[in-house]
Image (cartoon, rainbow, N blue to C red; front, side):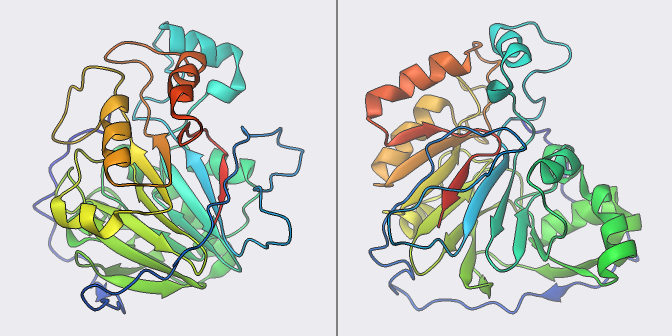
Length: 323
């Protein structure tokens, strides 16, 4: 579960931020994806020395690949201090291990959402050499804490500000926690429901139910629509309407059974219920604590979602989806 940090009181003298060159769609405009097919990768992560390609239908070419860099809640799986069944399983089975949440969208260029503390290891695992755009969902440590890993990429390789998009509240957190890094970032402030286009995909920042200024991102390509919301309670009404019928929903499912923080997170059961209500084509469960309220192993959780005949999937670190 994310740490609940105060998102106010930014220090004085912070770096000026640009507003994103955003495009707001007309009311009722159809999504870019239209009737795009859902072609998803069901396979677990493969060894680091093997090809890591998403599945696509015969004759189809994926223009973008969405990768789960990490799929765990704040303390990861296994946690170094924990001996619960989920952590014991993860120590013995690499497939069950989870780093903190982040994702990557690759086409001709590479866009990353969030910089978790594990990001250096996650990017090395995926063979990433550079990042072209950075988005943030919010400013909690488990989504922001790896930002310092990008400083030397900017200093030594790209030698240019990294275009970075987030809410005003999130940038206040960046400036407070990583003030020494702001010279590396071209900070573009996003307002709720603003959109921008990058590398042939459209990204829309949609408010969710978490810390002030937290966004989920609706990602639309000519083929597929995907909504990613790693940290949220039940979605606000306007956001829910914008993502109704989305092809792929990757949604916070922090807790197993009892939800300690219903105003900020889902349980597995609540995530599935809301995803089905929204008519999502395929639902991926992410931000999984696995430790609480009751520990559950990956083996048990995959057996549980089996009742949904493939419509609900447990996200895994390194799992890929063709967009």
